[in-house]
Length: 120
Image (cartoon, rainbow, N blue to C red; front, side, top):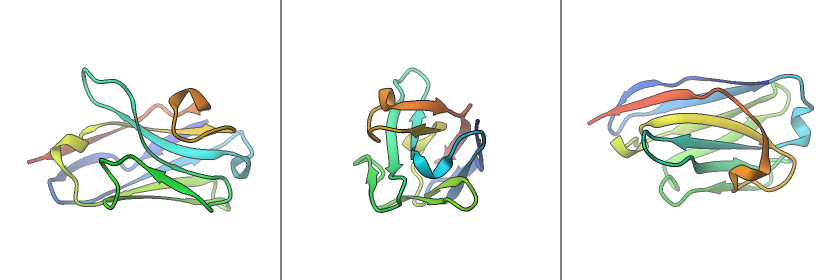
């Protein structure tokens, strides 16, 4: 089970930190990712982190503004979002993968999502 938290309302230029707590799986065996879906748009990859924390990946649209991290001792993955833009507004999902990190089809477990709203 993956449970996201930390979403809410932020002003453009502001910050939010999302968390995703995992249970019922061996967290350290899984690569973790964040995806988002805005109304009327397809779900898109935001960021991914390998199980060993040695590699991170970002969508071009968030590179330099968002940071993914994980704490394997706490079974939690984070997404620090800085310099938020109105176009970042979406429902954000965390997901767990035993395979790749960039494609939604690689992920076998998904959370329910947390809403991020950015006011301009």
